[in-house]
Length: 184
Length: 456
Image (cartoon, rainbow over all chains, first blue to last red):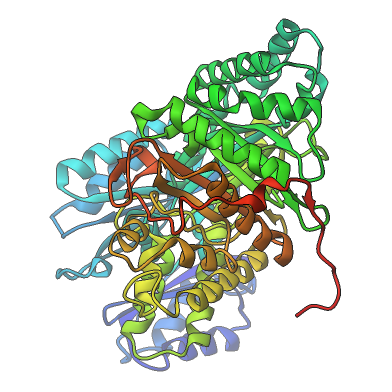
């Protein structure tokens, strides 16, 4: 068996997941992980599957394209190399970095550049910039994995400085506080 | 993975609703420091307390920074000095208080509590020395807090001690007349004092505990108030539903306190004790118990309906907190300290909240007549009568009650007093029948413990 990841993009509508998973079922593929999100009206789905040895990447891509022709789905199949572990297999912590304030060009780029320079891994990012007074419409939230060998204090100081320069309210809090308050 | 509303509501609680950890209190057991030699005793307690507490402030700051929740006060509670220092005279007790004050300054914490005696059933030599030392000890130190337990449900009320404490309070006020009797703000008289309370001025460390323990007091009046307001904005609610909102909010607040407390305890390598669920206000707008009454539809704390509202609030907080943590203790109720709560101070000044109503409120909440400034010329008999009444409420109802009354020298009802910081400011409350002679409190002896059946 071989592992492959299938990316599906389309304008959101009922039946996308049903169509994709049905094709995979007929090809005797085994779903290991699925995740999807909808950004405004755009669907993005990720399907991590085990495929039979007889189906290589190109065959799978061809079958998927054939059977979704005319539906508007953009599908991309990639091989996954052996799992050598992730950044989160080391000892570390998750911090939530949240900024509240109006949209400006390059916000995500500026903050993620600082995070990357300190070798911290963004494991989840949500950003909504719709304007207006409601903070829910002007928020960026990064979940960042930091390890003990990183200089997190320096990274947080740099992020706070950048937020101040840009006139954003920034909060940096360990994930456990959100668990304590929200996950009962 | 968190939803947007979970992230934003958590941030909102800290940013705009004044959620913080009000006190992380390190309890230090001093029984192994006992000596009949004052110098040796001083060295022993200094070494023991500093040995445990040296990193307290920095650890609290680090943990607070990690979670984005400020630990406002770092404090120490110790074994009752009247017990561990029973061999010493009043003058030596004052020296011990000064040593404790110096220790508090050395480790940079704001208060150290436990200059205390437990005299509900009788006054021993060490207790008498400590009570005699109280006025000078509190006037000559800034960070030492004192408490004396004069009543319990099982022992009754020690009326000799009640009168002694009234005298001590008057004397402490006189010694700090230039600061509006500030020494009395650091002195509590208790019925059923808890052994694990993190809040001052009553914190001390009980006798059945480990060498060191962390107890945590959370806050959250602003969070509760906003939760009630937010829900009412969506339409009418029954009081049962409002109680449910309070309960859920208290649960969240308690979990924050336990998270912070456990991490501080872990970093200090000491045992975690309890979370005190008390809603503790500050003299800041938006962080007031009094404002919760407004959110519930009462114009001011003290108007008819206030006792019922407070009973509901207190009970809901306990239910939510008890669900959130298996280790709750201390006072665990709502505080109604007059000068420390802007809205309560204003309600008292405007005549909505009298001393009598305040006493009635304390029958359903913690802690008692707290931070109540009264005219300086109140007689010691009247003061003792007020204390005895408050102790009776605690004794009969098997709950903690306390008196932290400040007879402000040279000032009358309606005059302003300013204590500063968390102690706040207020107008002096009128005391009815203040000048009457009161032979009752001079009978002395002990009011017997109440019967525990025939409950009505």
